[in-house]
Image (cartoon, rainbow, N blue to C red; front, side, top):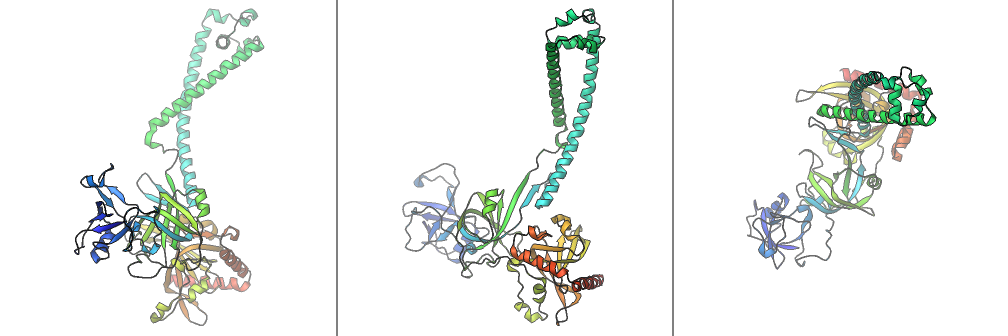
Length: 540
């Protein structure tokens, strides 16, 4: 722990302070959140700070505090620094491990997180990141990655086979020409052309001599019949060595031809990195204060783990609590994101499992019925604040029957065209949920379970998108016509058509319930009527 020193007041724009432990002092560099605390007076001269994981900058060599070189300073991270109590003892602390800082108190630009306690609320499917040759960054699902790997290896194998075929043909022609020239040369020797008697043949004691004699003879088959068993073995050994030498020479020429191709031939392995994303929430419900809630507490934040091991994936399950150390904090994908804070695991990150009690922000998964989503709409604008959509974290799971699937191309603001697939699902033949899939069903590998007519599908991790501005032409239960709810299928969305493949019991029960409802003849009539209403509404 150290005590801050410096000038009183005028903290606006202060990025450098001086810390002391009562014996020595060193300058310290502040990140933006700490500079803001100095500017508002939360950190002043005499404030005691708890500092963990400070980085020494300005020099790479150790030094005595009284002999500090110019420019040497400690770089402080807000996510590893807190104000200490006035009676705290300065200097090194008995326990070197950093205390867990509450998740809502972390800042996107606050640097490394020394330690925090959290609960895994959602575990999303593993994505595979690839940086292509044209510097494009692509994220793919598991199914799409398997197809891309097969396509890549098939394309590369075709190029390798074409190169090998060309080299092999040239090599075979060269070997045939060489053998024919050698055969003519051997047959032209008188000493070898007259070796067709038993005594001369039996005197041959080397595989190479036997091979040359047989090649120079006018009747190789008759010459072969004169060989003893031991001579036949020597001849076979020589032929095997010749075959091996030719194969090695052919492989060497093929490698040289492949090396000459250079960048035209892709490398044997693609640079693909798996990425595991999880939504995490605080272990305990935080006290809401303006100064300690820089993140949206209700939605938590996203924790990304690059190259997760199989053992780690078995441990990181929804509903489990962990104490996590050495995380990297950063801003969300956009300024308007509901998750301004994102956490990323580093090589030093460690997960220690804790007991998860009550009082957390964790909400277990439930399969939300489409009827509950539709009935959450309130027609009066004054009642919009009373709207209770059953979508914790802005996401939900549901299941239903595919009523209609419409694909089209949408022109974006930059003038490019992007495919869009709109799925209309229902679970009761009355209420409809519209799911928008940007990039089409093939982009998320859901074409097999969605394309069949009136297929029963379960969808997880749908992103809530409000209600449609058009009327679906279907009346609610005595409440007149109402817009239908909408959702977006993102990279983390999962479609499935088989209940036994679903991990969560509520989703399996929901799909079985819809399957049983499909056996009723009234349900089939409702689906036909609902499809007609949707087509009429879309055409208008």
